[in-house]
Length: 252
Length: 232
Image (cartoon, rainbow over all chains, first blue to last red; front, side, top):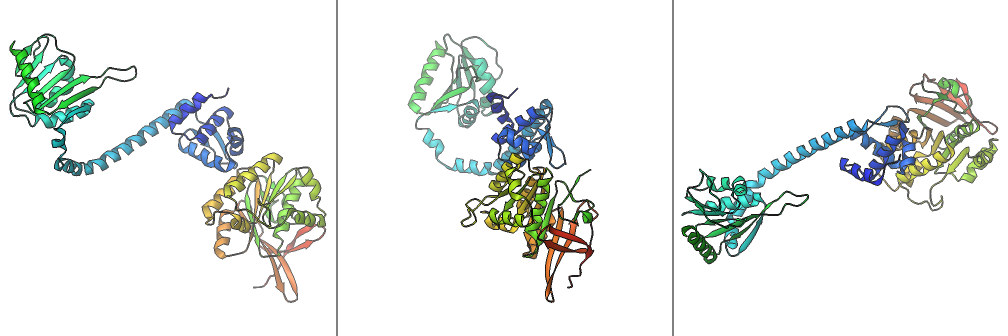
């Protein structure tokens, strides 16, 4: 039985080069083999095959004896591939930890640069789109910290909002929080709750009268979990007009 | 247990407990005119006549000259070559205008011919010329070790012929080979004395003497059992 293209392709997931993949399949199929046989069978130039086989030993997929010529054989795939995956995972974790450590060292410097820039003021000029709950929470943290009067949350999908964003608001402000929902709920974190009909699926947060953030969940795809996207505006007139609308809705 | 293979050099096997150990790399070194190339040819011809085909990578002499030399020793080189018992490989581009070679290209070329005739013996004549022909100018100990290892992986016994050059080179070559044989041709008074010395041969309890050696037109190299005094 010869391995098909898909098998070769999938083996690249083990971080194998083209030569390594071909050599590995040859050894699996051929049993105990010497380098020259593998070179022939896998069409790998002889000058390259020895290094390739040594790399496969290093990657725990095959073993080689100490004889001359050296004989190579495959380790049982189930054991070998699991060992290889575990090594890849360990290597990745080590690399990631190192990356994280290195980046954490420059983080304060980056934050200082960011704070010193006029980025925030620039953003106040327009309507901004923010993707992903991490980014939305990060922006929310900074916005909420600037609120002096009150925060109004109008939510047609309160459960999702609560799970993903409420904590950020509650933990970063002392001001009263008002909630507008379409079904009656009990919520200890909220100061005032209003129930109105016909709210859409989005959640809108009005921060004093300087910013308004509308958060909606994007469609879940076949292969992707749903994510969040938000529209932020800090155009004063626009925010004020929305706030007046919601206040009218509450008082009706 | 590793098998001994007959060297084909008359009298030498007796000094080596029966011959070289199969699949080892042996360095044959000596100055000009000491018989290094003849040693290599004799080793190959003996194998070729006993179902151990061989390959010579000749970087110094044209095949036509080597065939003639072998003819002079009464070795049927032409017939052995026709029967694929012996092959002589030369540098790409020929001797007049040799092209620069990569070590990988040399290894791949040897591999191809070893596979084609099922060679068991290999002679590289010489390591010094190979280094000169290579495009990689800083050919170092690691490259040489890789070269030797890959040749041995071909299941061949390898003779590496080397001219005596710098001490540094000699040390590097001898360090990497399993065995070292030194050939001498020294002027003493009005005549010259030939000698052969097994300097190192791992795994073999070899003679430690420098033996007298002769090269005859009929039989090639003959190693004599007695010691030769080459003086200082």
